[in-house]
Length: 322
Ligand code: MTE
Image (cartoon, rainbow, N blue to C red; front, side, top):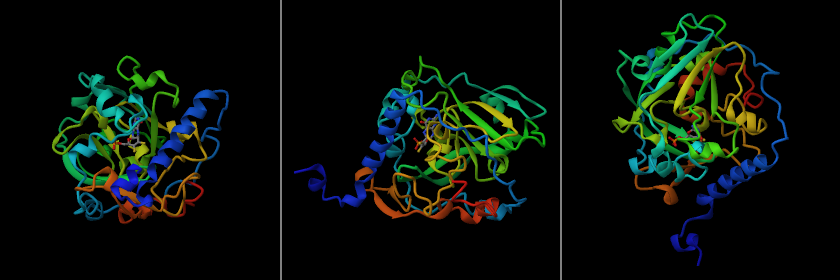
């Protein structure tokens, strides 16, 4: 008898393993075919964003949800952090080697006050707030997590971005001594992500330093990571060491690897399938329904944050700019 029969889990609830294996296979294919070069994203630029104003009340309505929380044990043992291996349970054991103090961040590019800054100074004077956000991974699972963090926009303003700062690029630490996964060319290290400046300044975008009232565990991206709840989880870059204000859309780690599968915007969108799997539903890991028993629920546009963020994409073809 298979494990699935034994547990009486409907097949539709455990398809993520194949999805996940598909992503692994893709990684392996790229690892053995390094000569295959892929187009960057700098050759095309989307239309400029509309000037939208999110009211404080609108923003606040996204700061909490009454949905069942994902258990601390699941949040901290089912992770994607490829610098520590591609298996979901790899980071919780392997990331113990990540030294998170002292930690500093280099801020550069189109801003009046660039410089290297210690983590404590970066967030000095800003009181970490608790925000309960859904986070949906492109692989089809989702969690509801009480994060602790400061609004990224408040931090970025300290560096006085200029009018040329159209995007913000982020980079993760890439130290093979602390990060065993870096020794494998699964993705082109360092892990890189980017946001359009209005997305980075949006009040929902969080620079997280903790979860469940405690400092971030290493596997969740200590000592600081992004949480962008209306985008697929891979936009929420972990263990950030560099922030750069740039004029052109920056290259990102997953787009660099496979542009047809991972676009720059990566807004959660059930109407746009990933080329190799549907994005219409998700497996919610929450409450007692941990991992194998997770409920399958419909995925909402912008991961349920449309009221707060959809206006930023008015006029943008979301099928083209996935
Ligand atoms: N950041 C780095 N540096 N490396 C990664 O592999 N994985 C991303 C994102 N940030 C990743 C990363 C992906 S695919 C997801 S789904 C989320 O982190 C998972 O965050 P969590 O482990 O805290 O749930």
